Length: 134
Image (tube, rainbow, N blue to C red; front, side, top):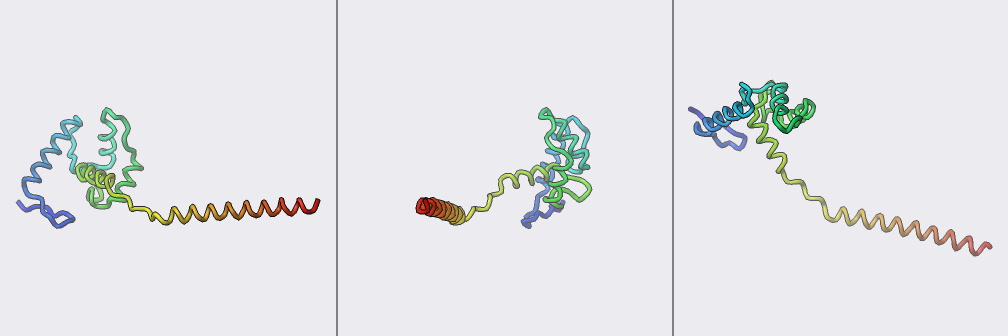
């Protein structure tokens, strides 16, 4: 049995495919629904995820946003592979955030301080000018 090619160019062996099938079967039993978790329509996925004891965990709009961001990595355009969707969510959750430029925060602070000093200086000149006129 030929493996399926991943994005990184690695192949999933036939053993990996069997393990995924076994996991999909276990999820069907856990959900108590006779669904193919590898090929769910969006409405079926929302219903299955919200059927859990956690209650409502996703709505159609959130799923639509996720599908737009993930593209074809989580399904074929019409259906969604729950296992790939979960894997995509995990990678999104653990994606490192880009480091902020440390000098940008300091520069912004310096600009705020300079602006405050200018305002204080202008106020003190106004008060000083008012004292000399009296």
